[in-house]
Length: 348
Image (cartoon, rainbow, N blue to C red; front, side, top):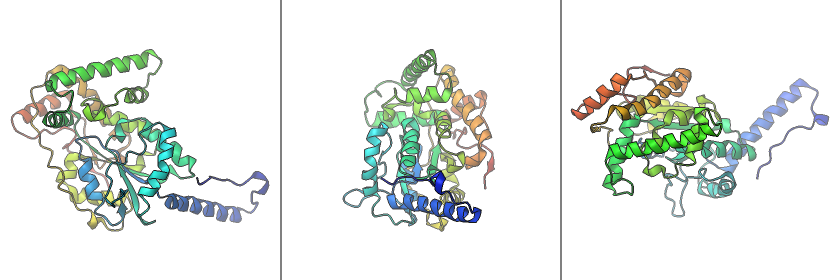
């Protein structure tokens, strides 16, 4: 345990210059503590079927980034160190230090767990525990790949069907309707008990929907998840990249990632071919279900407008008509163009 400390009032230096020197030294010690403890300072907080695995393989190719290692020296993609209640997560800190023990002090240490953006307890744990250990949560960097929620849902549904996962022995429409009904029930319960703000309702329901690897709707609430993270961390600590841009425009994306992580060599980031380009043909979907996804598009557009610096590309909000047109385009074999491929402005 590395204790935090402050000057007692009785011994506070009276000289402004001396005070400046001492504060600078304290901040230096705080930064050194962060490196000494060797815990993650870079997080990929993705969602299943959004390219998280590909991004992990891309990042670890850089000699300036270090992943946790298992007992055989192999990279651990998803250490999942912060998803449990804080008193259990606290015990994982020592385990995390051991897994990062081979990392150099000047490397960024990577935790790439794809369920982190679906669990409210994660940002809570990171913020509370890092402060408890005398670390500055403001030094952490986050990266997230986002994907059109309807497109992501169908892609994950196909994955579940192919792997014969439980709960996927129904049609896509039936599974979506069932999950929306469960989500509406959870949201109604939360609001009936005085939880009114969307982010807090989302946090409440994140504890109820525990099988995130089997769900289509809740993991797609990426805008609300990001808003919740922004309650604990500055949006400037985030880089949010549409999956389509990651695949189609990696030269620019790689440079932006390197800048975000303060990497010296942006040429070391080579796009991994782990995941194929996201092209998907959507099935027939009733308008009632399309309306259910409209809220997510609206909230993401509002978030982009409020915190544009956190996004690789400033995206326009697709109208409901555009959503229907995208579905029709996909069904006819053309690539859908929603959140993943909007006209916009490249940031920085």
